[in-house]
Image 1: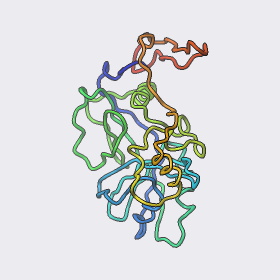
Image 2: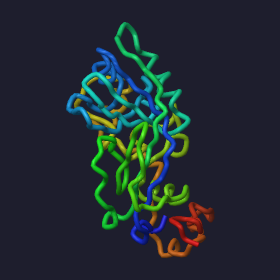
Image 3: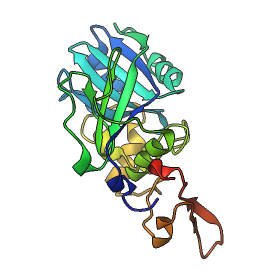
Image 4: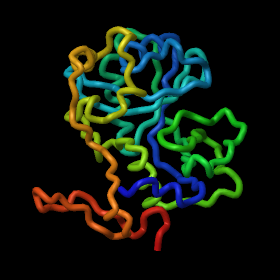
Amino acid sequence: MCSSDLDTVVMFWFEVPRDVVKVSGADAATYLQSQLSNDLRPLQVGGSVWSFLLQPTGRVDVLLRVWRTDESTFVLDTDAGFGEAMVARLLRFRIRVKVDIEPLSWRCIAVRGAANELVDPPATSDRVVAWGSGYDLLGEQIEPPAGVPQGGDAQLLAARIEATWPAMGAEIAPGDTIPAETGVTGVAVSFTKGCYPGQELVERMDSRAATAPRLLRTLSTPEAERLGARITSESEGRVLAYVPRSALGAD
């Protein structure tokens, strides 16, 4: 992608398909703490964090967001189409614990734009952690911010790539990708929380300062300034990427 296409546009809102579930019960907090890669102990009511559900081998099952709505209730959401995998993974180790898992038909509205174009988000309890420059709203009855235009799929994709945020089914292949390849371990993994499935591989790579090739990167090149331009590898003679003419509302 060319550098900071978002700097040329105003703020947009997007309807983002997400699969959402509620995890509740007397053991919900301790159970999720034992399964997720991030540490939920510091998470206050109303707070949210990113996390992984990993296989015992350390490979990614799901990248998700965790939102604590009260002391014993959490809302988990992930990219659309991967909710069933998220629930199946949660159920796999749910043994003799008081935990209920319920699907929710909620909306997710993402607001994105250049940092200097963003207006303050509405005063609402529905705001959750988001990738990139902007904020997300998650809930059953939420509305986009007044006066903000709706963006299209190409603009949302450009914003995600600009933020180097990986997506399930695109950069993240369930059962194959390891956390270090996603580039988001800094916000989705705690290296001090203790045991959870898949921890061994994550900790081993961290302790050895091992690196893995990131599956999503941005490129800054004069060639990318032309909409529709192809970015090619001189050594291999193949196309690495291109700048779509529809990116960020360009004609």
